[in-house]
Amino acid sequence: MLSGSELLVCEGLCYSYLERFPALEDVSFSVCRGERVALLGANGCGKSTLLKILAGLVFPVRGHYRAFGEEVSEHKLEDEQFSHGFRSRVGFIFQNSDAQVFSPSVREEIAFGPLQLGIDRDEVEARIADVMAMLEISALADRAPYQLSAGQKKRVAIASVLVMNPELLLFDEPAAGLDPRSRQWLGELIVELGEAGKTILIATHELDQLEWLTNRCLVFSEDHHLVSQGTPAEVVGDSDVLVASNLIHGHLHRHGGAVHSHAHERAHHHL
Image (cartoon, rainbow, N blue to C red; front, side, top):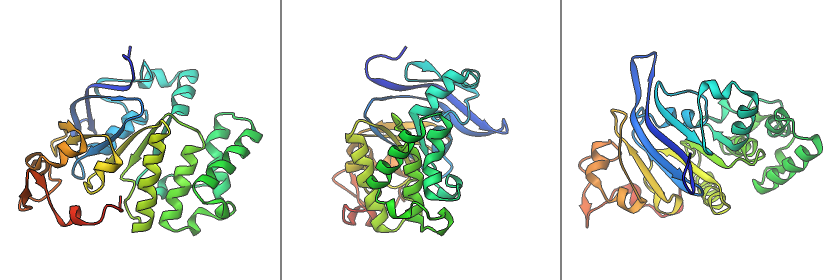
């Protein structure tokens, strides 16, 4: 069983595609309730695969994953009651909103999840109104998702998850393809959701805004191992690990033990 405030526990997770292309190797960590955790690593290191395991979309070939005090496995998720409870508590925001947003209208997209869980239609309509107001997309309710900008699609994808009121939110490269204003809005939303008690994991390879966006960072190497973890300041200050993990270039200069790059010198208002 989980102890205290731990929400997720991963022990020795291993995953390979087609049984021969490693994506995760012996990954162990835990996440406490209310944490905002960044999963850092170069493209292909296994961050997205890990999020899919945490969402119950794929399953490790070795190791154990426990969430909300119970083991999560393919067998357990075949049980309708367990699956219903787990799916209602976990929200996954994909990197590509087009892979997530598919209904004829924004309103129908946001309604899809809670209706699938059997929530009363009146309750669903109230939730839709609330989440559209919060994300400032009420005017888009009757629009077709394909007509929307990348930033608008991202808001709709997030709304379709938040309407379920999950405890755990998983973001895969949330800022990818967004303009600076949308990136700023999204960063502020993630912080606000964390302050409201949500537990949040964010897969990213961007270092700029970690210190205000997250509480803790997990760093993955290109050979799919978890190689470091700590506060954002500790991780960003360890240039040796960042260079080895291909998160920064080796020629970037060090100053007082901290990494400095053009990215870090930009104003702290982009995600």
